[in-house]
Length: 157
Ligand SMILES: CC(C)(COP(=O)(O)OP(=O)(O)OC[C@H]1O[C@@H](n2cnc3c(N)ncnc32)[C@H](O)[C@@H]1OP(=O)(O)O)[C@@H](O)C(=O)NCCC(=O)NCCS
Image (cartoon, rainbow, N blue to C red; front, side, top):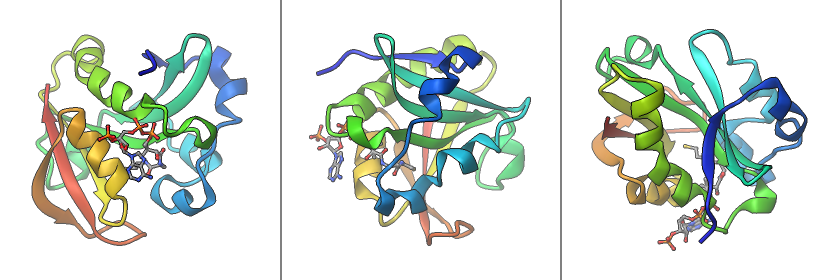
């Protein structure tokens, strides 16, 4: 299984990040890199998943998630746009990254008690990854997504 590290994205990562993409049939779950990057502001922070010096994946941490979604507590982060580059999928990177997330967030975002995400009901692979990494299904559905109903998952920090 490959070792990974999680880092806050910096301008130095941008050339590699700009080259990341998911498979065509996966775009409905996260959007294109261009669509993802426009979400970034002072409350929504980009992160990279690294194997040594290579960027293999990406995600956003949304510090306003608890205020944006009724199902989340106010002291909650949101995990958004989590993906592994399509050329790097199937190597265990997502599983490793989700497992590393709790320790990373406890250091980087002290004061937040939970992290939430939503995952499309037609995306069992991602749901499986999140469960392996410590997220639990709330057994509630979020119906506001453009690509159909989504499971709401949560992990305590
Ligand atoms: C879902 C995703 C993050 C998985 O990344 P990955 O690095 O290929 O996953 P891993 O290699 O770490 O696999 C982790 C587990 O998921 C399973 N898995 C991964 N892809 C799978 C697939 N397409 N179908 C079924 N199971 C799959 C693996 O078998 C493994 O389970 P196991 O340990 O029980 O064998 C990746 O496919 C992706 O980026 N998809 C597009 C974006 C997306 O859907 N993001 C989630 C938005 S909520």
